Image 1 (tube, rainbow, N blue to C red):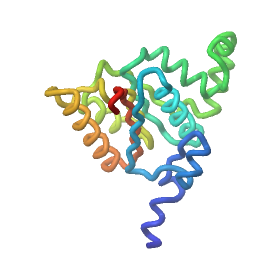
Image 2: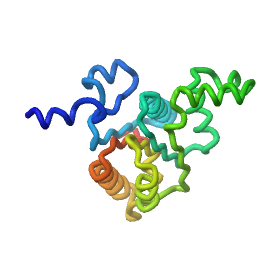
Image 3: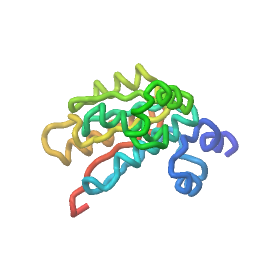
Image 4: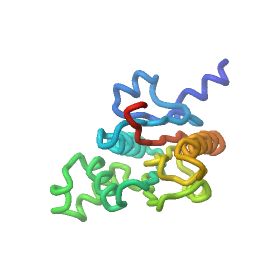
Amino acid sequence: IEELSTHFTGNNLIPIYPTALNNILGGGVPRQSQICIMARPDVGKSTVAINLAVGAAEQGFKVLYIGNEDSAPKMVMRILSRFLRKPEAEFKETPAESYKEALERGYSNVYFKEMHPGNYSELRGWIEKINPDLVVLDQIRNMHFKTESMTMNLESGVIACRNLAKEFNLVMIVITQAGNSA
């Protein structure tokens, strides 16, 4: 039991933000876990994912953020805004100072990779290259895993991501849109 319990302590737990959720989870999510964020369009899925990524990066964890929904410049600006706790318009006025501040807060721990739309081999390759503690896949529904149907693609994607989390000892966060029926 003692050996098993170490899996749920220290660097084996990846912090989750907001802090209230992290506290409910007992200090974070253990490695080899997968979280799925599913919601209707335009309700804040990416905002939650950015908060999770930045919070982990600020704690020194390496984060790979895969973006295939919104443009890379838009998402990177949102990530920077979260690190700086300022709206984009404010930190664009002093780019050198803002960049330095973001680096001091952990920005260098975030690796953003845009995919068009992406597939398993690309995802696996970036995980092997970066060796992250946390991977955010925004959005899994746009990736190509299986082409038969959206349902089969999502199911294959979720299984593949869960297996990558186990194999590489990381936490995987997948984001997808949901219809009214979900």
